[in-house]
Image (cartoon, rainbow over all chains, first blue to last red):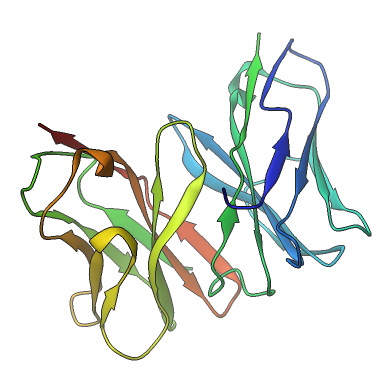
Length: 115
Length: 112
């Protein structure tokens, strides 16, 4: 158990809909990262927040947005969903700001299925 | 920007045999290297990482990796694998530019 929690575990929705994925980092960790894992694209970094501020941006679509709240939990919002958004979405956390050097602790993931 | 290539998408091996999972990277700046493991239906877990110092890095579960700057490689090795090592293994490269790239993954299957 990494200490990172993600809800829900599974999510099934229809095209055009909007969903929110939630992540609680390990106690004491200030950085939260979001990743998308799919068979064709592999593991793609989406976005990083550190102590409430956006720190780094990866391959995140404009239809997707995220935020980190004062209690450090984070939400990833996916809107106008398409079939190709079906994937496993991971949240990870670390204690520092440096994505390139820090050990990241991954949650169990949310499996999103868009029908 | 840096990139990482895992040279084998699948590696089948018999139990108690040695294994090497290959990883090559490219970068124009100093790099930091990681190996993560993903067991079925779980998130990724750090096996080991190289930030500086000794080029031979020992990790959890008996794994080790060697940083080879001249060959831009960071191959993962284990002298004797167990059935429980069956998993997906990801090499990743990070930098001081706050960037992290993961490889496509290598699926290790250990057969009895």
